[in-house]
Length: 467
Image (cartoon, rainbow, N blue to C red; front, top):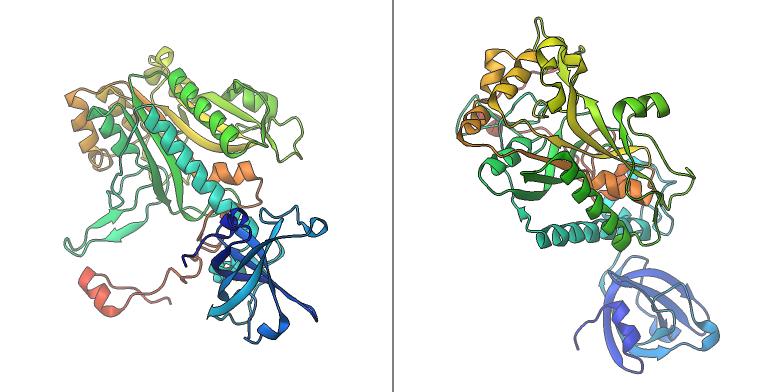
């Protein structure tokens, strides 16, 4: 007999079935024993005679049940279960893998449990209904995005994870090279340069569910170390084209994946950066009518950002000397065409063709129209104070710009952040299968960890001991 999923048993009334899964609950009575069996599709009640319940069965043990699917009496139907109108009359039961005492409760939402403990036993934490739902919702959202973009002739391209360190705005994670001692790869902060090179290559419509890496401090809406974004780039577009496509994609995504959620306003409001600061005191305003309503989704666009901000002491990755400017978004964002002349006269008054995607008071995505003129790109490098050495780190881009560059732009909504805000979870880590803790340790694996002397020797690295 072939195993079927729990949810399929509903269509097998009065038939014998083979089920396998985890013991969700056990209820023992004098005349009958009930076991709730859980698998990836749901939960079903199984009924045993106590005399047949001789094996030691514990919660979360993996079991195999052969039994007859029976319709429940009308008064015993459970409306809260997809399988609530049936039960399994057990004929045979086998323990495939016994479970010891579970160190964390799995029947609650888990919010009351210390996060470090949940991360240590993440493989158990993911068994709870809320967490399983979150990960499955995320999977369905990504599937929808892929299909939607493929239908519109976008090409999915994977770009390198081992790449070059360049000063792009955050600290890089560096990876030493064994074959080229003394040199390092960097994990990509985003596929920014690669996707622009793909536009130069003529692909015109690109996307990627991209893994990105930044050595930034964690917070509730930002995971430490790595995150996932929907990376989109298009050629021969204006800012309006990017906004319309993204708005349509995410509006349809909400209707499909979150049908119980209501979008506050459509089309999404568009607010200048200046107006947002003056009216709301924030460049990511929460526009919900009822800010306590988790089923209300208030999208908005913030546009007309300043192209530059004043450099601060934290802008160590940009230039120095007489430079007083740092990119508000990134150094590849195009100046507003009406403000080109201000690049030489008053750079702080130049607007950038940047757009931020806001949801319920969170920035869930950002993008821009890119610079496609090498002279303007050189000018921006000059204004942010790049030395020749720093400028040379982008020589590959500047060279590519000499071979015909289409006007292009894009956006990169965060998958983790969008799902986190849409579900109304208290932390972004609630929608990531194996996130790093707030202290930077990877769930379950106890990473980062030390390396042995042989590994370090091969890489030509010596670790200084702490004093």
